[in-house]
Image (tube, rainbow over all chains, first blue to last red; front, side, top):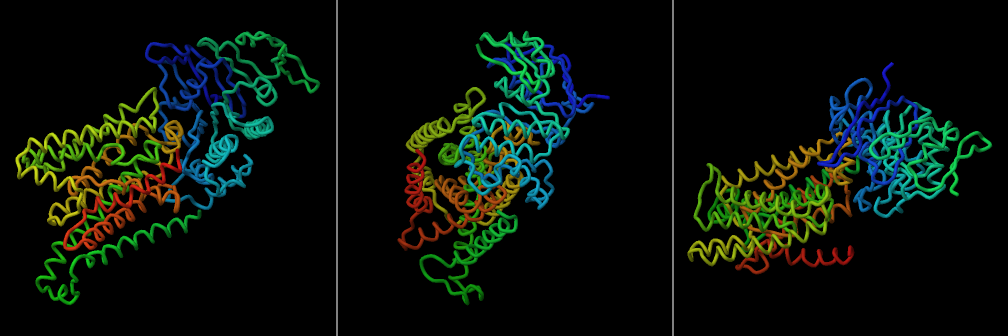
Length: 255
Length: 325
């Protein structure tokens, strides 16, 4: 069977600077993949290429058996939802209006239908921001804004979610909540790919970790295998060690 | 906000627009008798039809075009203080138009020279201001506004220069045009202007959903089905056509593109599907009313609509700046 998403010999370069080369991996529906690497390793660029926002220098991204470049922008938007990094905080819209933007790819009338509103309501409920729905977006705290943007991505009912640092501005409780929602979505059959830095949050919720280091994928493994070989941490200069918790899940500790 | 309530605002704005179109021609120095108009008696009938009605239509559509362009630039550039005037587009269009006045050009490529000149100036300034504010893939709001101020001064310096070098007769027509007044125009150019404005406005408003996405961010928009390059091109092209068309017929008029979208955004709805059509309709009403006030309060002298708009608009802008910075 063809995988939902497959990346073959993917290479990307800005003008004269190579960002990554010859990346290969494929991902199935239901996986929750975390993409890690130091700042500037090219994680966001890879996510942007997967989202169809940037064209690779060479190589292919294949989505559901069809090359990504062969999808039209609107076809793509009904399958992939993308949470970009650093969205402007002074948006003129209300929370509900931002979340309803997730329904635009399905729009066939001037205004949203009752069904679209219901979808948006469910997404807000799930991200815990339903009580904010009539507030202006610009009056929310950073964490609240991030949850609203996530709700908008959820309302899109995607098969693939690409999230660039979804836990930005979230406090620890909200981070855990956010990642358990994403893990639930993965269990429901959505492929989630998230860029993030928190090792333990990743180990606790995700099924697979990819490490992007110096332009190559240096590690690609299931989260449950993280404790057997700590070699995957070599991209981090600091002293870290991996232990297995009583529930069998691995955790990373700083020395 | 429910769809029903949003639709109500659209209908209400349309009703106000129609009401203004029906009532404003009756405003002005000297009363006009309805009976004389209906029986086509001079002088009431020709004054009403040739002067008042054409002037009201011009005011409504110029105000509409400028207010819509304001809300368009504000969404595209994600900067709530952007409008044809603050970005220097009005000044650029004026410079282009003044050049054609100074050289007594009548037609360029078969189109009215004033329009073509204004169009060229608008496109030139938009490109220059956009280019100066674009850095590492980002448009900065403050850079846009400051480059706009710079372009404003440069364009007006050239306008003064041209005006100084021009013949007395031409200089007079330049000065008159620069006042930013809504004067009676002949029906042929007026109808051409109305047609072009309606066409460009419909194109812009049809993309309302995409302007919403673009107002959040380019990355946000491009993964939600928007073709960024095409949308940006539509925005700049229609924005230039709307602003240049309006300015060619009236001279530079400020503030309407700033105040009307801003008030509607905070008081009615920031969703461009409502904001843009309402901006057009109510922007038209505001400018046509300013013109009505201008031709009445100092009668028989006239205060140009641009001056009335500035008297009302400048304090509002200062209040807005104070709230924001």
